Image (cartoon, rainbow, N blue to C red):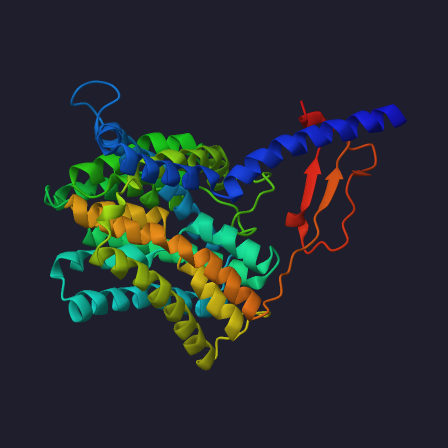
Length: 440
């Protein structure tokens, strides 16, 4: 009996070790960061070969480029997962349900969008008078969900309410970012063809009909209405990367939201199975997105660089802070455990703009010089990370980190074996359960 227990524990530890390495890659956004770093180095040391990699075709001369594959096809799944998070937040138990609970972070989100736009406009039209960069106002509006979530957990601790506050803010302002891309940044070389948007509407109606008739496979939603939505956006000369944003909300979902970034893997509804199928490939594939979009020369620094960077650092930080305090004045308080100092640091972390900011920079400008300068501003937002840590220490923000408890589940007839000892477990998301029968 003791030998069986020992073998079960060993198998459980092997599974934990494998999951641990993959989780590290995902939680620390290592693929995206690695792609960005490689792109910057490559573009500055060997710009011609980098340009050939990005804009050349790996298949044939004049064929589809890697840039197109990542920006117009791969990013479909990235934005699809973002749409899944927004959809779930509207379910009972989600951050947007009931609506009153979300008023403060939602007003903070509005401030986090309007603040950067205001700062960018002032920089463009008042301080520099450089009208050529005016179209870049949408670049600093979105927050990098994965990177901000990572930094927030490191600054505040996993159990701090500021993490959930920030995550809701990031998801919603990315949703606003999607709308900004669709409405304000059509392809200038190909005027919008509104008639083809009817194909997207038809795809949405088909997805609704499929849900009404009990279709549970997410593949069915992706391959029929999903492809139709992509084709409609592409032929309408809008950004096809947004194709699944119109379809994902129609996928059958759970009756309640267990929380953003839930990791128990036991959800059986279509929406969560879609995320579980594509979350890891998307997280790893962000290496390619970073490589395709972050390759800018250091000589590209210009007015657009400082405009984007200032809009993120000042506009986002004080926009989030100011509108959250306005909500508090109107009778919608901050979450328990948050105060003014925590809110300022939260606003700073929200200023991390990378993935969506790089994407918007690529569609806001057609001139390579302006595009590169704007992307440098988005990349420069990583300077906020040490500032957030520094202000967190200065304001003496207390980290709240529940101590994880690891449990190994044996077959139903047998008792549970505890591998690790948990002293403080806030909720079931902090429990890692492993069944020896699944450890093969």
